[in-house]
Image 1 (cartoon, rainbow, N blue to C red):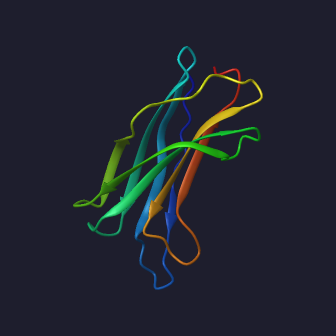
Image 2: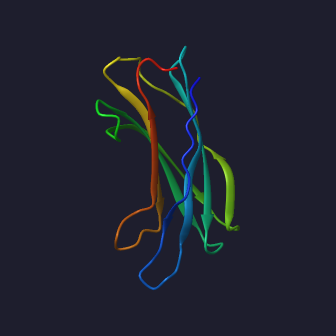
Image 3: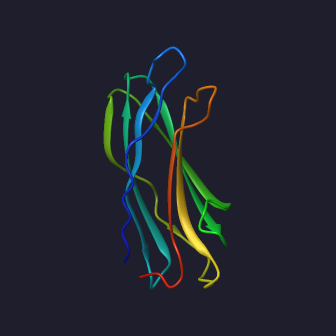
Length: 127
């Protein structure tokens, strides 16, 4: 099973407010026997107000985020740090060795210059 870790994606509003200070994929794994992906995220915010984090499961032929095949949104509130937020595992529809399977995280609220995001993927063969 492969594991990828990416860190420290943040969003700064024009007025200097960090709504989402850090959004990162903590663990991303795909079981090579079942093609089931597991995803955990870490989120740090500037305040305790609600923030929505969406996991987009995708397939692609380029290794970059491509066609979203499923997504799940969780709303976090009450704290400024969330460690190992677990998303529901997703089973990809079979393996095509010309295809990558991956996950993209996005968060809301957004600022004028875009949404904080983090992504990772596995190619074939899954190790």
